Length: 136
Image (tube, rainbow, N blue to C red):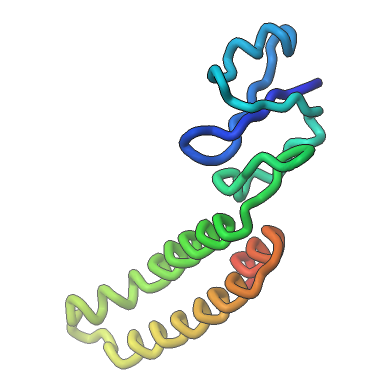
């Protein structure tokens, strides 16, 4: 089945899935916007970097810089989650808790995510960015 795609004003690519016919669905494309009618196979099945989609010559491409930004945002969020239990020990100065061990754990987490950051910066494809984020 065919789809209608166009560059959304807010960024990314809008995908219209016609319920009846492509011709009827064209009314949903904003006036004056360039659109393409593509097959379902031309739409990436992996939505991981959906906010980085851009209109390509034949189909949807990925803006690698936007993919890297999304990757860094996900890296920062994951790092913050790993920091939480150690931050609490240091911040609250919990009696009986080893602040030195917490800081050592934080240093190991920083090193891990510096390596992820380096891999994201060196990536040339969305798959390489995703692999960097999934590596432990």
